[in-house]
Image (cartoon, rainbow, N blue to C red; front, top):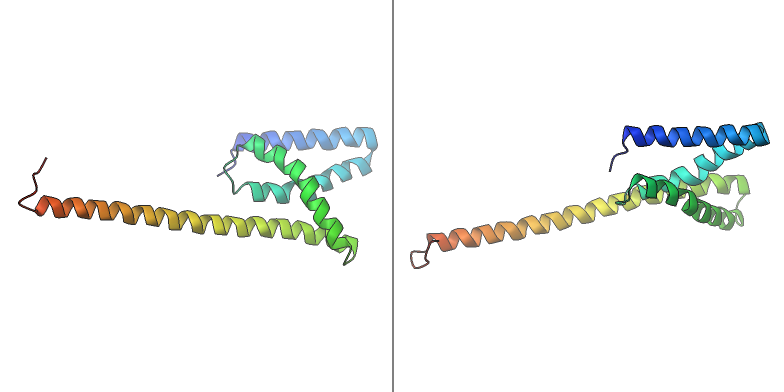
Length: 140
């Protein structure tokens, strides 16, 4: 599923408004915080959700809230084992990698399913052709 140019422009405008508003209210630190939240939390989950058949608005909203939950929890539990700064990067990489892996598995499943449907259709066509060559079978 591709992203439309209008949706991408709309998303860019929303991100710019969020960053500018946080910059006016909280200064440079606020703008940087919003930009990092978008990059670390929302974008990796958006790539994962992009493999599913959601609309653009659903993917955008779900990516923000799922990103806060999934990436935050993953970062916390990885941070118990390694340094927290490394855990942030590793959790974002894991979410992106899981999205890529999910996409590969989904494509493989869909290709196998379509191949099975095509082979079933070919068998039906062959059976109809065999019946039409049979002189005892009435032709429609």
